[in-house]
Image (cartoon, rainbow, N blue to C red):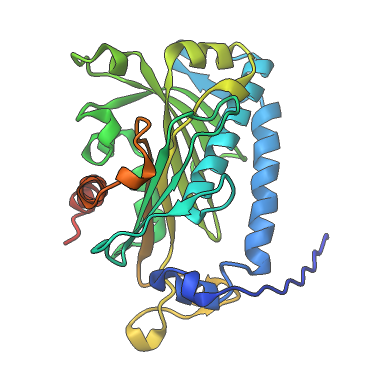
Length: 312
């Protein structure tokens, strides 16, 4: 039997942590050993996705090992860009400071990066965190269900999505996969009809991620044929779902070593994040009106999720 002992000491500025997430950090789930072990497991899942022969697709389509590796690496980079935009790590993200922005959301911008696979325009990363009165596994299950996607995905334009490729990460674990989705509805916008969705889902004891990005068909064909995925530009959007570890005195559940003591929580914390091109708009011209427009889009996505779950 293998036993792993991990001792970690971390310091952080609590004022920089969103107020909803402070109980989660205090109870150890944010920087505790269990979270680091979960990240090690995620890396093993990534290696499994590269080497596994378990691939499903429309009409039992076959993906070569090179194509599987290229798709997995693209999904890994997509997750990394998404998390960097949420946490403001790397790529010189700058916090947008405007009046009346509210405490539930945060906006970051970064100038274009002259690297392959990186947009050359100014990018806005918009993030909103809210409490949801459902268990994390229920929320995660709904978000990865294509049947409900049109209710919250603003990129779907009200249409449904069809899963044409799915690579499982992990043994018989429905929550960990890399998928390619195709819009089933035909729109008047030829650009939209030429776009696919790359989606990566993962879940562990510390929380779950659902990250997706639009990829044009020609780029996806290159990737699936084993081509270099590092040149594919990505603007990820998605969700992070974690247990709501509010103190019992406030009606929630306490945590022990990063896990709710009764294996349940009072609900979930949902973080929604979009990354949007600003079409070379100078950062100085980012107005309260444009911020309000993006906040409205995020609020619509959150409300669509609540409607599916039957939440107020």
